[in-house]
Length: 438
Image 1: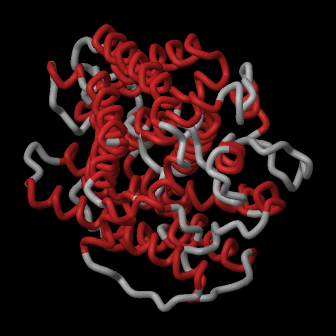
Image 2: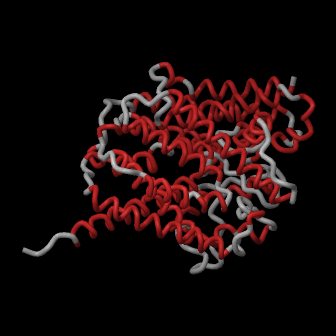
Image 3: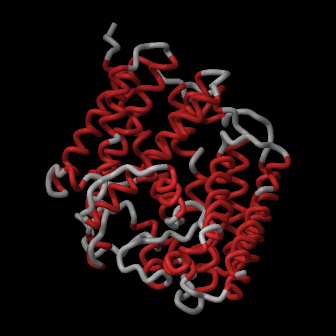
């Protein structure tokens, strides 16, 4: 009965976020991406766990911590109210299907943009090589395990130490995709661009950044829909299958790196287990746990997790004692008893952690307005570089917000905004340098 009730809690919350589906079922949107995360985290995961009664000990230790389900009732209604506020504000913000004026005004010089993108993509690949060297040199047995944190000290000084290197690598990945998209739109050859995309994927794969790899695959699919009026269902399904296979491979690599076991790509059942037995996406357990734990395991933050994001852009090489920006490690340590893993709360639970019910309502209202405004635009009317901006900055907003943290979303937006701005400025400089004086 316990797991039936938990699954029902997830479906109640999912229903509150599903009201916009009454108007539109377009999954290729910011709301659509969020709903994919919500559907997997709030419905598929609890129902999958319900169907496996022989795994109850593992499920309790990973998700529910043997807490009586009655203690999750408050969290259910708090997050469901957030979903209702989100849906209403989304409806109110959704207007005409036009691009934003600022994005519509961005028109690049295709030649300069190709050159700038190629140069930044090469720099990104160089950053991947530097990252490999910084983390002990190339070791095939350690691929996709470099993010593993082995002790509490490393939480503050390990993975985040390489922030500048990872930022350059991220810029290179965006640039390589920009080069690919600009060439595709101009019907030019994409062989070099394809190689650069693959080369720049080395860093997130080696750093075990599964979300980045999967999002890149989804972003490539979305950009392909802007280039053609009719993208076949088969192509989309192949892309989604590649995303799932990538998740399985990276999860297996991360697991074998921890245990020393021999790598082996398993079948569909193991892929499903990898997708279910984690706390990513719009996860039910972490949302309910955070609401339940505020005032007990978790002290009210009163805005502290929002302010922490300000310190995020400062490298630890400059500020060695910089406080930990992400709230995930505190949740992992205090709720899930994981000394090394960080569990980001998601926007709605984090709002409650900071300001109680008012925080959840405010977070839901702002996200609904932002998502509705994004989905009011038609990115197919934009020029290629503006489409890249749309896909990297705006499309993932709701998806990341419900799965990550406020500081995580802010820092991702800041990082990619800087990368895209530098790419644009370099493109302008290269364009001006080609102009000969009269």
